[in-house]
Image 1: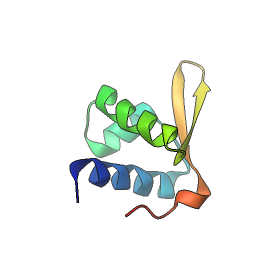
Image 2: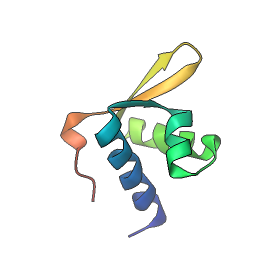
Image 3: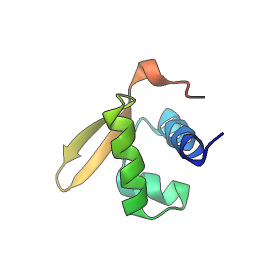
Length: 71
C-alpha cells in the first residue's frame, strides 16, 4: 500500500468517527503539519470523497457517505 493511500485511509477513518472536522483538528489527530494535511484533504475533496465547506476562516470536511470504505 502506498504512503498516500495510508494517509487517505486514516483521514477517512478519523471522519468516520467524528462526522465533521477542521483541517487543524484532522492534522492534530494525524500528528502531521496542517499544511501537509490540507493537501491530502483537498485531493480527497477533488476526488469526491470528502465535502469541503468554509466556516469563517476555517475549512471543515465531511465524509461523503458513499465513500465509507477506502482500500
